[in-house]
Amino acid sequence: MSRTDDNWLLRVRNLTKIYGEPNENTLNMTGPLFNSNICPETDAIVACADISFDLYPGEVLGIVGESGSGKSTVVRLLYFDMEKTAGSAFLKPYNSGLANILEESNQKKRFIRNHLMGMVYQNPRDGLNFRFSSGGNIAEKLIMAGNMNVGQIRGRASELLEKTEVPVQRMDDRPSSFSGGMQQRVQISKAIANNPPLLFLDEVTTGLDVSVQAKVLDLIRELQQDLGIAMIVVSHDLSVIRMLTDRTIVLKDGRIVESGLTDQILQDPQHEYSQLLVSSLL
Image (cartoon, rainbow, N blue to C red; front, side, top):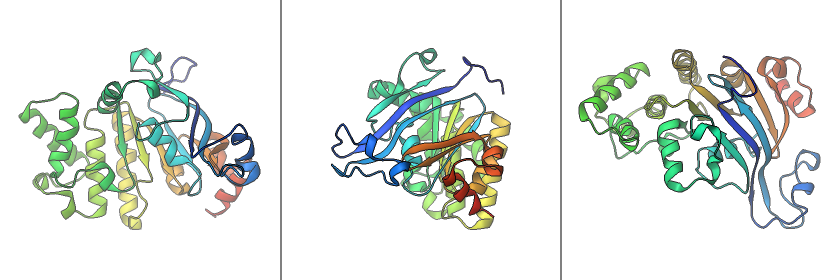
């Protein structure tokens, strides 16, 4: 993985999401210094504010923080699940990184999602259509990217299910008949169906048994090494961050309070909030 100023894959600047009606003081009266993301004057909620970072090809970036810190909001904004309040994001494979993808038309956003991004949600019901079979879910992603050859689609679905350790003979079964861990593996298969350069993982092991968590994490790490996909991993669990990521951003009350190499943050956190998170691991 080569990092230079112009070798970024994703560039995010000043990403902000506010719910409610903010005023000119909202951003100045919320955040870690106030231990709150709720504006005392308007009750507007600052889900995240002024989030900026670069992600490089093949890199795995962790975003960590307690519930309500804004970490899931960041990836859902970048995946177009919600509209930003402010900020920009540039994806190098799209228009050579010259267009703010957050301000593109809905049609162009669909193209970006279907060809250049994948998402694995905490709840498989957010990423899978439970009316479709496991193979049908993968087919849906392939068809949205323009692949209409039934034989190729079925072959790709078989390949992905095998890669993610889902029995291929269950291709025509619906996800509702699968365990939680297997549902996540089908969701991962769907997310990587079109070989996207960027994959978002939002609390993918939350709610799974510990033994199942380990298998899902091993699979993600293996896929990342085999395919070289850049990933943004959202988790409140620092053991997940430690296992998967190269660099980490720590969020509190919607703001970045620390960022750096994952090993450095876990071994020598500088911000008192990061220190508190790390101490919970010990």
